[in-house]
Image (cartoon, rainbow, N blue to C red; front, side):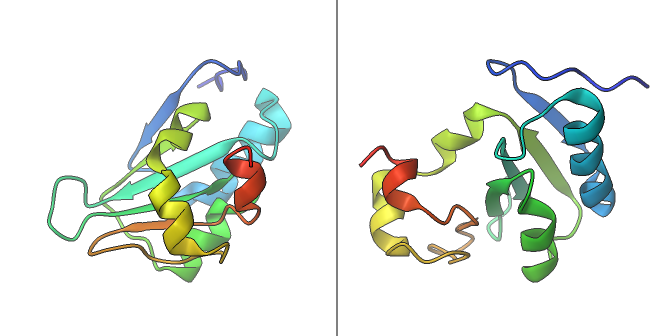
Length: 120
């Protein structure tokens, strides 16, 4: 199927695609015009007590998924809406560190420049 061309205001969701995440991100950047810094979130085991969320960009998410051993079932969310997964409290918890798990299931993030991310 054709890839959905990039539009800043849209959100794209992929189901059952975590096993081909690197290829998916590469194709979205090279064939569909997505910027490398487009936010990407992976929600692993959604709705379960051990749910985890991994947040990065097109450029970093595949490495983060490997680093944190993300497994199916997972939902991949692409677009600016991913930014709502992170809060000021997350920023305080991360202390600017990359790839930190917050809370039980938690949020893992590959967003390295937190002051810039939150407009500070």
